[in-house]
Image (tube, rainbow, N blue to C red; front, side, top):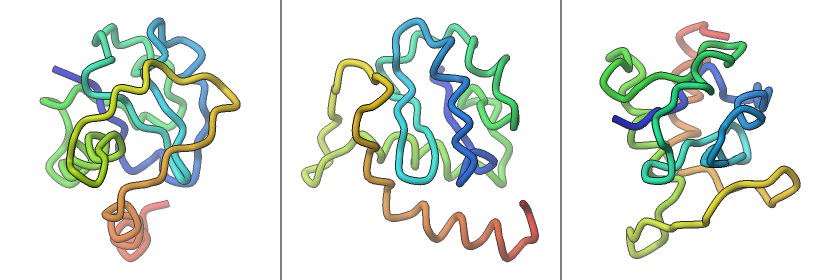
Length: 115
């Protein structure tokens, strides 16, 4: 069961999670971080250190955040929907392009008054 990053990371991008990941599977995106679905070894270190409590195991994601399971996966898909295997993130790498659905989810979050 992979870990996913949910909406409370949008526009926060603290990044402390990347410092404890033993396999560098957490990648910086334009507005948030993403966990690669196959590179993650499910150790849970990132979940325990996240200052905004944004990281969950996929089977523990609340219903309101369920779309972020797909968002995390989509961040690593190309135009042909093939899963990219970048091989690990390093600080200073160019950020991943955020999936198109992220903007709509961020707007819903703002409309709901969640900050």
